[in-house]
Length: 115
Image (cartoon, rainbow, N blue to C red; front, side, top):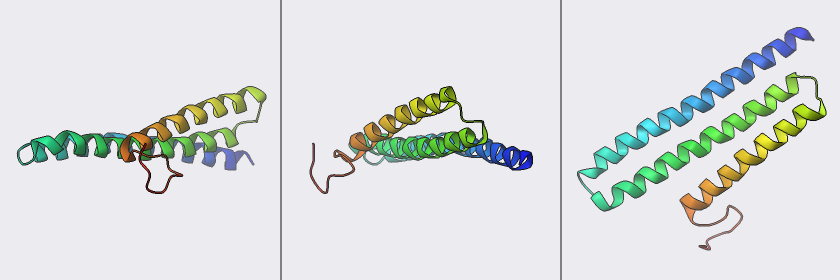
């Protein structure tokens, strides 16, 4: 059982690294797209930059939430560790929801309505 905990903890750390790298690579790509589109369409460059950066942050946050859940499964579930996980997941979920509303102009459960 101890080996299983070790491997799950190791996988959770890898997932955290993947989440951080997703945000970093997405930000780098967003800057690349921004500077590339600056020469062609100056008006649209900022909007493309924000959307590309927002999407990469959103994906990275989802991966980090999964890593936090995996890391909590490995530890002995105390009330404190579960409360900390709940707070972290709530904050990251709120950030994800806010980013999605900012990017799409509507809540995820709305079909084609704008705010």
